[in-house]
Image 1 (cartoon, protein in one colour):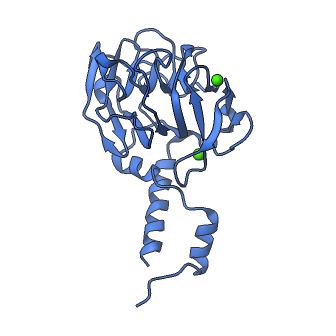
Image 2 (cartoon, rainbow, N blue to C red; image 1 turned 90 degrees about the vertical axis):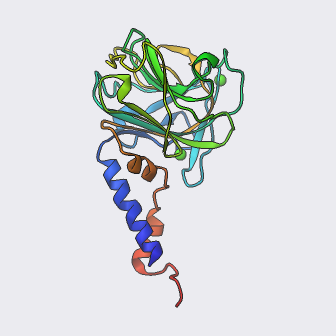
Image 3 (cartoon, rainbow, N blue to C red; image 1 turned 180 degrees about the vertical axis):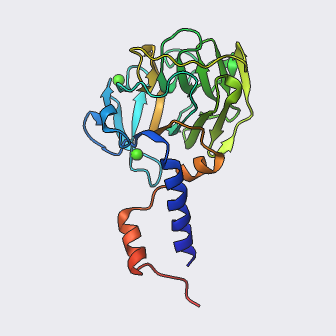
Length: 259
Ligand SMILES: [Ca+2]
Ligand SMILES: [Ca+2]
């Protein structure tokens, strides 16, 4: 019965976190130039620059590899504006690389105008002075960094949670664990006031310049319009059980422990 209990727990956790899911690009197409948004088909992504389909983390289908030059996924999504709470999660695989241009910015997901407090960029930091290769949320004028080094070319689950209108309300997670945070620029009191205009959600490059691209692989990008808990983030890291698997469980075909 242990397996049934585990699957039930996953279903419950997944349904809780799905409540506020406003965008989900799972990159499972594995072909073509469209990355569908399964949470809202209006905001499908369009591949640009030659972003390549590659295998994702175990249980998450395919992913997209970005070349650090011009690869990106563009959407017309304005997402969550102002100081409204939000969460973005993704899987990333980030190789060791020079800590500066041409891979400047290393954006995972970015949107908003490039004026103070307006642009919201979830990225890997590439600058030694503000902690190279760490997870970072950058809001024009300031930023907050995590402490885990990400440049090991292994899959890591990353998340940013914003619960209020300043950087001090932001938490970062790597592989489901909260990061020890450091701030730069205007610091923890810096306001977050996302104003989007034409700079809609872009994956793999910064919203304000198509020249700021990540060198690395990204999968399963999710946006929520609320601040997720650590438990909800950890639940997202578990692959959803396939319909076939659930069917076998329901019909009693899966092996159970012998006494
Ligand atoms: Ca390219
Ligand atoms: Ca995927």
